[in-house]
Amino acid sequence: MQEERRLAVLRAIVEDYVATEEPVGSKTLVERHGLGVSPATVRNDMAALEDEGYITQPHTSAGRVPTDKGYRLFVDRLTTVKPMSAAERRAIASLLDGAVDLDDVVQRSVRLLAQLTRQVAVVQYPTLSRSTVRHVELVALAPNRLLVVLILSTGRVEQRLVELDTDVEDAALLELKTEVNRAALGEVIADAGTALRALVPEDDASPVAPVTRAVVDTLLEAMSDHRSDERIAVGGAANLARYGDSFDSAVRPLLEALEEHVVLLKLLGEASTGETLTVRIGHEGPYQELSSTSVVASGYGPGDEAFARLGIVGPTRMDYPGSMAAVRAVARYVSRILDGA
Image (cartoon, rainbow, N blue to C red):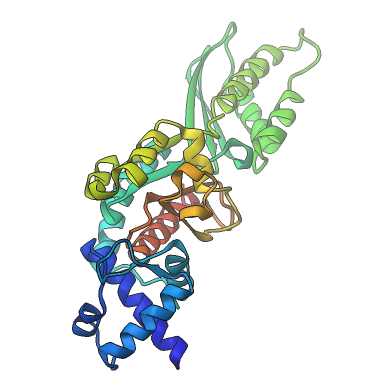
C-alpha cells in the first residue's frame, strides 16, 4: 500500500514537472492531485523517494524534480501505453496515406512525429541488408529502349532507362522478365544480385546475352543505389526552443548531435524484430555528453521485420506517455504502408 502511494506521488511529481517546468512541492501535489492523504504524509513519501534517488531537490526551494531513476520507474510502471485519440489517429492517417513513395513516407513521418510530440524526430531509412526484391518490371518503350522498374520490400521503387544496341522482341522480353523475377523475387539484395548475375549467358555470341547483361547490370546498379543504411531524416529541431532553461545541459549537446547522423543512429539503437518500443533515459544512452537527453524509439517494417528505427529525441523532461504513444502509432502505420506497398 505504501509503495503504491509513493508511486502515485512520484507519478504526480513527474506529470507536474513536465507540465509546469517548475520543481514540485508537497502543497502543490495535495492541491492538484486527489492523493487521499495529508500533506505531512506526502512530505514523508517525498523524503523517502528522495532517499531512494527517485527525486532530488535542485536548490533550496521546497520543490523536487525527478531524477533519471525516477523517470525510469515512472516509465516502467506505466501499465499500458495510452492509445492515441481518434483525432490523432485521423491526423496520422490523413498525412501518411497521401505519401507517394518511400522518401515521401519518411519525410511525412518526421514532420508528423515532431508535431505530435513537440520533440526532435528522427527516422532512419530502411536498411539495404534486410530488403528483399518484391517485383521487377521490364517495359518496352521502343524496340531498343527499356524501362526497368525495381520494387523492394521496403517500399522503395527505382526506375532506370536502358538503351540497347539491338532490338528486342516482346516474346523475348517477357521471357527475360519471367527469368529475372524467378531468380530475384523474395531474395535479400545480396542473394538477388548473385542470382541475377547467374542469368547472364557465358557465351557472348548468344542473341540474348547483350539484353540480359544490360538488364542485369542496370538492376545491380539500382540495388547498389540503396546503400542507405546510414541515411536518416530529422525534423522538429525548433521544438528545442521550449527548453531554454536547460540549454547548456541538454539543448546545446543535442543540437550538435543533430549534425552527426552516426550519433543519431546510435541513439535510436539497433533495429530489432518487430515494433518493439524502447525508452532510454539520460545516462542510459550511449553518449555521456547527452546524459540530459532521452530517446523513445521503435522499429518499423513490413510484417514482423524491423528494417529500421524511428523515434524522438529530447531533454529528459518530456511527456513520456504521449511520446511513447505517438512513436508506437506512427511506427505501426508506416509498417502497414510498407506492407501494402
